[in-house]
Length: 252
Picture 1: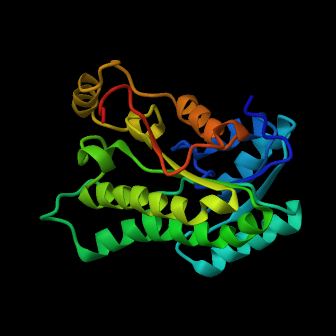
Picture 2: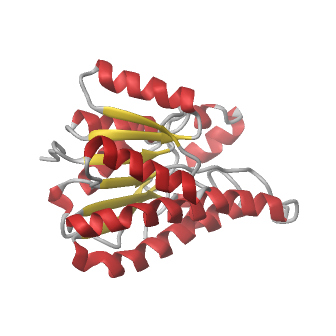
């Protein structure tokens, strides 16, 4: 199950060691996919590509600015030149900022939406023609528990709003492309054991852990495994959904 051999996957924001993108890329490569590591941090991109190739996987590194249409279109062109198809897009690139509504500036909210929502739109739009021609595609976007419960883990209200926008956008797109053989889904992680989490002050970290029924943060592998399922043929009848991965900290 979850055999991704012959599939090509783009993972945005997969160069950094701080988040979960790199683990998503490694997991999909382990399942046999050829992976495109796309990130604005090209040194990080190369590190991820090298790690995958050393493990026997196929990987292509691309420097990507998700806020630039030209950059997103170039990523798709390079991927097609290298692998000939695009089966999976993981919209993982994102930024956050801890700030209150009162202290937030227009520049703050614009910067967060430019990456978290508008960048996701540009990457998604860039792959659609290819996926429609193939009559096959998997688009999986990272939302957040903050989108559903109004913050409480990381980031400010602009982060929560941008991740809520991801959910609405994805549901609409799922209806648009269902007859083209393309599924569109989201995952909404809660607190995850990354370098970002480890940087929290001890008092803040304890407060967040106390709010999780399972009493621990999630592991990046747990998020990546769910994404591997959604990217597989076994998830062919799931679209327009979000999967909460939060240890019970939010239950619909």
